Image (cartoon, rainbow, N blue to C red; front, top):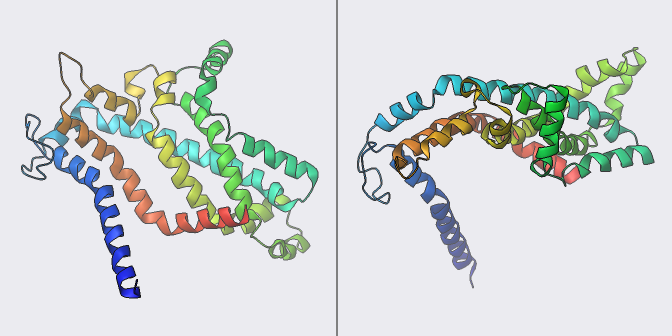
Length: 275
C-alpha cells in the first residue's frame, strides 16, 4: 500500500471515529432544542429550535441554588485535595528511602478500593460521631477518594523537578514550608491543573455521595436534582427537558476544560512518564 493510500485510510478511519463520537452529542443537543411536547424522532436533527426546554429545566431544577451547591462542594474539595496531595508528594518525590517507597505504595493502594464498597460502615461512623447531613458532608468522601490518585500524579511530577533549584533558598535560610510554597509549588502548575480537571469533573458529576449524605432538597447538587426529570409511569420523562438539563450541567465543565486543556495534557504526560 502506498503512502498516499495509507494516509487516506487513516483519515477515513479518523473521520468515522469522529462521526461515531459526536453523533450522541449532536442528538442530545438537537433534542434539548426541541419544545417539551415534541415527539418527533431524535434522529431529525435541529428540525425545531426552541429554548422552552431550557427554561423549564432551569426553573424545575432550581438551577442557581443547585449550581452554587455543586460549586461550593467542588471548589472546596479540590482546593483541599491540591494542598494535601502536593504536600504529601513533596517528601515522597524527594526522599529516596524504604519508608518513602512504602508510604508511596500505601497512597497508591487507595486506588484499589472504591469508596462505594464501604459506604455503609462509613455512613454508620458518620452517624455515630454526629456528622450532620448537609452539603459539606460529601466533601469528606470526595477528598478521601481523590487524594490517592492526586498524590500519585504529584509525586511523578515532583520527581521531574530538580532539587538544585531549592539550594539557593536553603542557603538563604528559607525553611521547608517557604521552599515548598514559594519555589516548588509554582513549578507544579501542570500537575495542579491535571488534578483540578480530573478530580473536579468527577466531583462535579458525582451524584452518589450527595444522594447518600445530603437530606435537604435546597442543598442538593446539580446531578441529584437531574433525577427529577427521569419521570415514572404516570409522568413519562420529557427527554427534551432532560437533555437541556444535561447541557446546562455540562457547560461549566466544558468551559473549564477548554481554558486549561494544554496544562492538563502536559501534567498527565509528566506524571505518567516520571511516575
